Length: 221
Ligand code: GLN
Image (cartoon, rainbow, N blue to C red; front, side):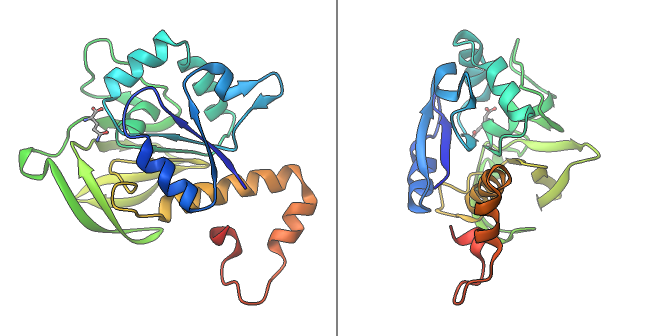
């Protein structure tokens, strides 16, 4: 069972936690460097950076000296899902940052905060994505305004790029956790399971062997 760390310094932690527990994951809160990594490397198999206020989260990350360790584990390949403010934190560049606001710069995209005007400030929508049709919520969402070469666009909304993936890092401008949408969290757990299998060839064989009655073994665990 993958162990998922949710960054819990500010923002919407609980909905991610409930959704992940419902999918069978073990969840832990990340508030200090020691929650994230020990002498043997990361203490979690995957990470979630939740929504909230990205400038506040950024400030707290630097006060708690968590920004550098987070950047290091994500850059080293820890499967990571960032939603809304979490996407802003992951981005290479923020086009309209709050004064002094920084990002981790591990996802090769540029984002504009609060990109959708007052009319669509918040909305719950059906969204077609590369992971299938989903139902998600936008709340003062950012827009991805530049997509780097190795970055796959997973979804667009109102003409804007709103979901991206670069290897094991996924960034979403919206909130799947508020509508109970599980597609993105299942993809995260699947990436975490693949990582674990690479370290343990036996687990990899077991996972890939066809099993009667299970259509999609990687996603269903
Ligand atoms: N607008 C917020 C920010 O700049 C993000 C909103 C959200 O996470 N729902 O951080």
